[in-house]
Image 1 (cartoon, rainbow, N blue to C red):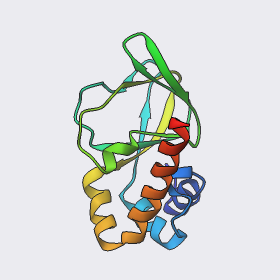
Image 2 (image 1 turned 90 degrees about the horizontal axis):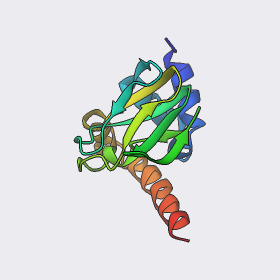
Image 3 (image 1 turned 30 degrees about the horizontal axis):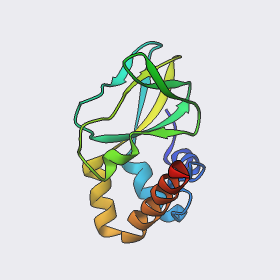
Image 4 (image 1 turned 180 degrees about the vertical axis):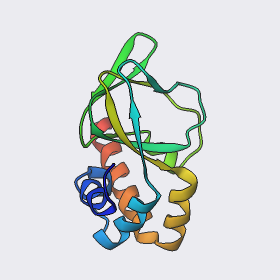
Length: 137
């Protein structure tokens, strides 16, 4: 189990949260929960309602659609980030490649923080916009 201070430092090292001040990340750290998944365990499935963002603390996950691998993600990478803004169905399945430790942030809790602190929303939007621009180049 990691402390709130460790969670803040971890969040600050993640691209998605890099533009958000530490004091605001403390609020995000407080709503995050730690989850452990076994090798081969499905974290969520394509088509399920998106309700949370996940950050890999330790281990590796595979993002896939049926047998087609979209990405393999490791420490300090995140997945499901669109779910914190939109409840649309998941576009892929994510499965643990190794025993994995994750930080989970629910959309409902995160949206409350964004409503109180619009600068957090702006930081997230900037990073997602940059990712989208990079993806279409």
